[in-house]
Length: 456
Image (cartoon, rainbow, N blue to C red; front, top):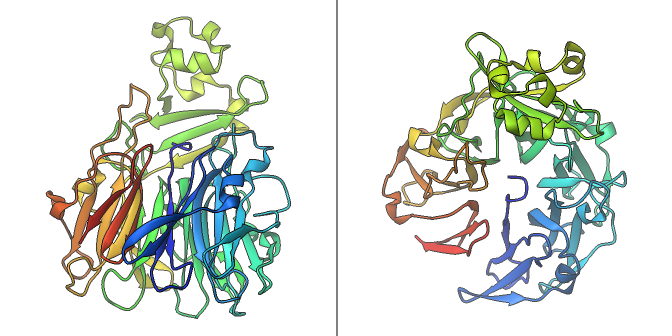
């Protein structure tokens, strides 16, 4: 999945003509594209620095006024696992706008001066209320070290578009946060300072309270215990009570994988064979409380050759638990992650950093959710939801996750959602990775496929 997470889009009026334009991030060796809108038609604007940086796998992006000059600049995360962790192709890019939709890359080293990081997400807010926009950057993964935690980076703006990474002093809990997939700034406690919610793979829904520009983990909520394979998060006032709620996309319930608090999925990570590379071992919890690997014997032996002597045939392997396969010393030194929920959910903000958790309708759980957009599509005064997902690149014994054609959820009031099996005209084939709204059109990107557009 880490190499099929795009393409992502960003939408904004970059040339100040009153019409929104679209940026589509490019995969490795494919240049990102900027399309300018003119009277509802789009034409590509060639950007030299996009072409110069096409070796990178562009991930999430955002338009915002970085340097305070009144036009919208562009920050692009560089992600994926296409290179070694020492590659400069993981440097993020800040493109500065000349006000006419022409972009030039800044020479800043981002997100941090310390090493290279495969980043996945960006969130923008004025965290210290000093009238400029600051950034949170989330590290998706460490190449060739699946399961090792990535960090979050807090980039503070000097007001002129120069960013300094200040997580160690302002947000020390961002270090080694996890395999981050998405994040949103949201003022949960209405104190005029934007708090931060971060989600990721094998992570709880992490809520950080902003205390005048410094962040601490909120201990006054239970959603941090909702550990899932979270893919994406969006915010909207779903119940019309004046505060913002959250929608979070997860793996779903239509697969071989099952997880609960009493029987979680666990990931054991260590260099079990001593070859200087981490070995991630995915396991399920059986009724007897023991963990057993999902991997078949031949797959596990391919990864850890020394196990062929311990388990010479399938008969000897069939009842082997994680505790049987590895020594106590190996397990004691392992990173152990867990997931206890796979449902996509909405989180209704009840105040004081508390949320009421509601599962999305059962039909939306048939496939992983990677894209969410919210809008009042039926013009009845409340916010409806469109979800998109699917994943094809899956091992044969697990099967492809392709049961979704996009889900339209009508808000019936008070955050109660009705699933429309016809999609109200929405039927999307493929691996949906992003959904954006421009005027009354819905733009949908799909991995290894063409763009789709729906009118509403």
